Image (tube, rainbow, N blue to C red; front, side, top):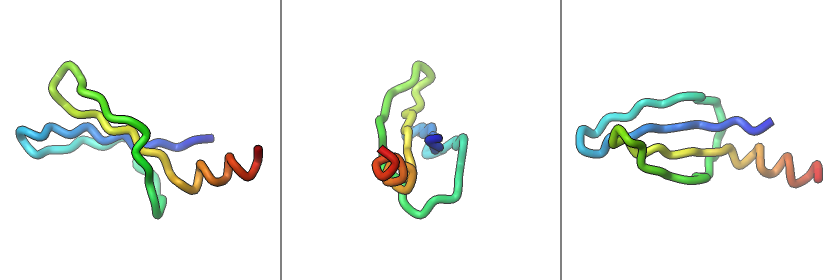
Length: 57
């Protein structure tokens, strides 16, 4: 199961709202997109999750 960290950042006001925060040492950015409300949404995935999936395959 992949676990994601999602950060919604409003650069103009320098604020961030986070969802799905999980304790992991290293993260990799999956993608960034601009939401209609002006927030930049960043999707992160734990590197450990990717490595575990590669080993299982």
